[in-house]
Length: 72
Image (cartoon, rainbow, N blue to C red; front, side, top):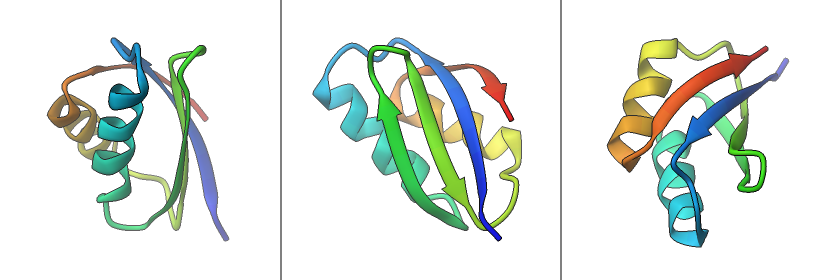
């Protein structure tokens, strides 16, 4: 069963931002799909299981942005 989690991300302003965040989150183990809503500043991540928040935060940081919150 897949888990869908929405993460609030600050600092994304353009297509490059979307690509960077998508690439980093997609690289996490168990991630099946990443959908970015640039206008809302959010990422909907579909994964095999709940992702450790530290791994998500590190991936977003690596892309150059900040994880602002999680909506289960």
